[in-house]
Structure formats: structure tokens, C-alpha cells
Length: 156
Picture (cartoon, helix red, strand yellow):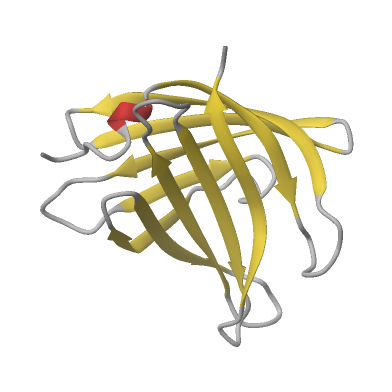
């Protein structure tokens, strides 16, 4: 069925957000909340989240198209990471539990950089479900560095 990977995750989630500006540096940590909800038909899911950096609150959304008959893609908007601009992440792949999508952004005066988003769905029969969200910054030479990670559990 189309759009079924994220639909079991519908609801409110909470985690600690880890943010890295440079590989090897300590992570900046903050509380984060994520709301997952159906958006369009049975193939698009909306993820709305909040987090903070240095005491300043931030928010973002990801509109995830996860139709079984095409590669997944994401439209991402975050008031910090995407500079309040829409970022299109395509070139997606999907397994039974992981959805990925990749995009790029201008970084003048140098070459473009990229982002890769991974959504890991963990459904458990006898324990808590989990939703792991990872964002990787892709340097112009193709190297990837983990930039954001949050392992969400259902809010109680």
C-alpha cells in the first residue's frame, strides 16, 4: 500500500535533539517535539517539529511523499537549517524501515553543499515504537557528516 511506512507513526513524539556544526565537536542538545500526521491522501505525511539552539526556539516541517509506485521525496522547511526557504529532497530510497532523500543548497562563493535526511521507523509489538531522524550535511567533495540526530519515542 502507498504511504504506509510513516502512517503507523502518526501522533506526538519527543526526544533530545543533537546538533553538530563540525564533525568531532560536541553536540548541542535540546528538547524536541515531533508531530506526525496524514497530509494528502494515503501517500503524503506531514512531520512538524520544534527544537532550540542556545535558548532560541526553532521549528520546521517535512512533507514526505512516500508513494509505493515512485521514489520518496521530501519538501523541508526549517527556520534555522534551510534559512526559511523550501528545500526539495529527492533521489529517495525506501526499505521496509528506512526512507532517505537527498537535496542540495547553494553555498556561495563556493560550490553547492547537500543534505541527506534519513527517517528510520521502528515498530515494536511488546515495547515502545521509535522514530529515528538523522540529517547529514554533504560537503562539496561528497563526504558526509552527521549534523542532526533525534531518536523519538511516543509522548506520554
